[in-house]
Length: 340
Image (cartoon, rainbow, N blue to C red; front, top):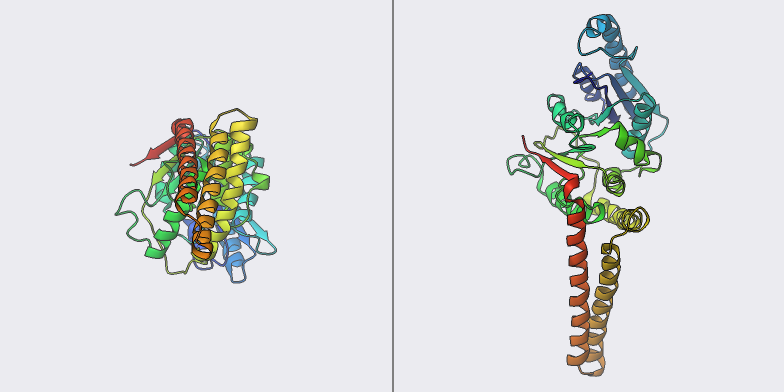
C-alpha cells in the first residue's frame, strides 16, 4: 500500500523480451498488484513474464507477513498477475484488460508502466500523490514541459508529438495538457469506474481517446513533468500513418464530447459557436476557391465574390476562436501541472 491506498500497475507488453522481466523485478514494494499483459507476443515475452511473475510471487509470499506490518500490508495473496492475449489486439486492448482487472480488485489507484523499461519506477509517487491528495483524478507524464526533459526525444517524434498535442487539446478540452502520447499514467478508482473503459479505443490512440472521455465526465487531469528516456529498441509507431488515423479518431471524439458535455449533461453555447464557426469558415473557404476558379477560367470579377468569401472566413474563424476561449474557461479548473 502507498499512504494507506491500494495501488495497482498495468504493464502492457508486446515483444518486450529482455525488458519486461526487469520491469517486474524493479516494481516498488508498495505496489499491491501488477497486471502484466502479454498482447500476443511472438518472441520470448510470455516466458519471461511467467518466470518473473513466479519469482516475484514466491518472494512476496515469503515477505507478506513482514509487509503486513508496514502501511497496513496488502490484501492480495499474490502480487503479479500475468495475463496473455492469444493474438495481438493493440496496446489499448492490453490496457483495457489490465484496467478491468484492477476494477475487479477494487484498487484505489491504478498506474500504467510500459513493458520496455523506459519508465522510471522511482518517480511513480509523483503520479500517485496528486490523486491521493485529491488534486486530480488522472495523472500523465509530460516530456515537453522543459527543454532539458525533451532533449532525448528524436526530432521527428517531437514534431509528431507536437502536432498530436495541438489536436488533442482541441478534441479533449484540456488546453494546458501536453505530450498526450505519454504512457506513464495513473487513474483513480472513481475515474476508472466512470469513463467507460469497456469501449475505450484499442490501438495507439487509446491515450487520446481516454483524455476525451475524462473531460466529458468532468475529471481533473494533472501533467507530471518527466524526462524523455529511450532504450535500444525501435518504436513501431509511424507518425505519418499514426497522425492520420488518430486525427479521424479525435474528430469523432471531439464531436462526441461537445454533445455529451455541453448538450446532454449540461448546456453551454460554445457547442453552437463551434458548429456555426466551422460551417461559416468552410463556406468562406469554398467560396474563395470558387471565386479564384471563376476568375481564372471565366474572367469573372474577383473583388465582390472574394470579399464576401473572406468575410465569411473571418466571421467563422472568430466564432471558432470564441468557442475555444469558452472551452478553455470551462476546463481551467480541471487541469493541474506538477513541475517538481
